[in-house]
Amino acid sequence: MNDLQAFLCPLARYYGQVKPQNLVFNANLQEFSQRVSLIANLETNGKLSPEASYTQVEALWQQLQTSKNQLGIGQSFGEQPGV
Image 1 (spheres, rainbow, N blue to C red):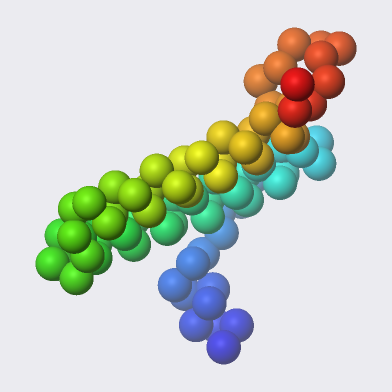
Image 2 (cartoon, rainbow, N blue to C red; image 1 turned 90 degrees about the vertical axis):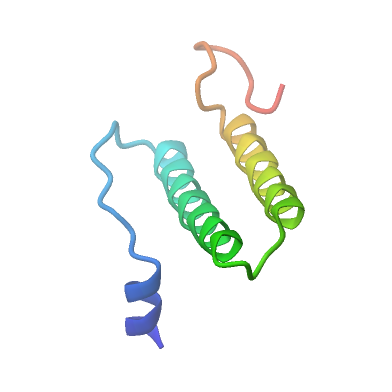
């Protein structure tokens, strides 16, 4: 099962500034990208309606934004995460 998981959802190596919050956000971003790709492919092949696709991608985007805010990615030095 792990081989199948690695094949279907490969993770790319992270080359950015190594901080715990950056690593977590990168993993979240990669998962977002893979899921959006899957949703787009399902919609393209007629397995998912455009409305359902949009709703699912919008929900994933909200989760990614929440993750970014909670981890404090892109905030000025001294600001509290999630504020």
